[in-house]
Image (cartoon, rainbow, N blue to C red; front, side, top):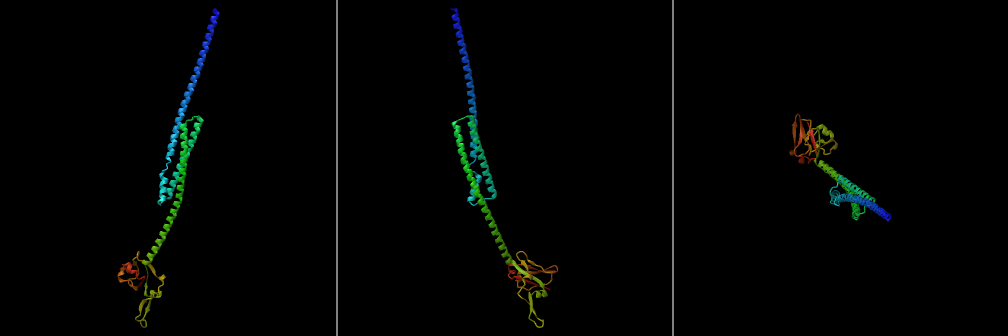
Length: 290
């Protein structure tokens, strides 16, 4: 009887120990599972926060690629309103488009890396996936916009070339007009003069001795048939003095007396133009020195 009770007690103890061991093992497993779950939850939370921050940064960067970009918009408006768009301005627009395109490419790379990182981590959150999908769509829209800007800048190249050609043509027209005006002014303002003694003027055929008898009483007259190479030009708009080396000078041509004066300067006489408009009504001036 006592042995059977002892055996029953031992069996009960064994069962209790087995239950205790089983409970302990179960508790350890539960604790480990809980710790792993908590770690996974913290990892997911950190991954979500990191992904959300990255999405926010990409969103801000894409927003900076504004449809109202002032640089290209200003140049485009200038071209349409026929303002002068310079080559330097066009280069600025090209640089601006290049910067926008580089920014877009960096954002597209970040979106791809973010998407790949989320797949590897196994973090699947519907809200993050929607935001990434929105970012892809915005990046595509910005790419289209930048392509349009590049087209506008390319049209500015044609505009600049056209303006440069127009400016060159206008400058050439103005130059020709200025030369024509200067030539006309010079023609109107220039008289031609010759200075010489009686014998020199006779030899040049500027004057002739006529009349008289046996060389007596002959008069000097202008032949009117001049060798222009023997005369010097005088632009009366810029020059008003005809110099000579003689102390006595006689004006043989018909310039109005009020339009000039003969003035002794040291030991020689010079002709000074007083009224250029009146003086040049007679296009040739003949001075005979004595």
